[in-house]
Amino acid sequence: GILANIKRKADIFYFDFVKNKKEMEEYTNLQEDQEIESLAVKEFSSWETLKEEEQVNFRVPKYIPKKMDFGKIQYLKIPDSGFELSRSYENETAYIRLHISAYGEEGKTGILSQNIEHQLYEKRIGDYVVTAYQVEGYILAFFEEGQTLYTVETNLEEEELEYFIEEMK
Image 1: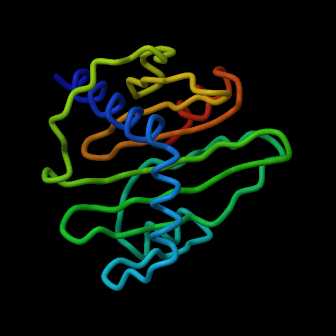
Image 2 (image 1 turned 90 degrees about the vertical axis):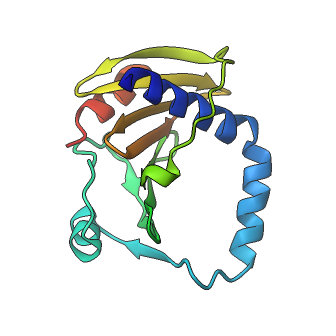
């Protein structure tokens, strides 16, 4: 059912993202050095401007921890399948990185990972069933709504992460 799909995507993302983080960073750095003609990343300074200009809909954070600065929103439209976007919030000691992926049916994957040794919890937070992993000093949390996958990475305490997620509207 829906819970199994969310869990599968969270497990897949966890292992693709965390286990291969070094390779992904190297790949990302390589991509940044190359010019990608068909896909261009756009920057936006507000969620409202992004939603209006790109005609997309998704949940946005309504709660930002005190004294956190935020960067521009990085947005990438993926032809015929959806979009990817990310935004970071940070101060001298803490950070939150939000990544949102909207995908069409073709973007879904059927791979299921069984290794969940770093899973912190899976529980309902507000409107979402959230799966979280504790990884080397930070938490990765995942939840899904329709065909949109939300990923939050932070070094904040669990309670503050949960409130951040609960207040996404």
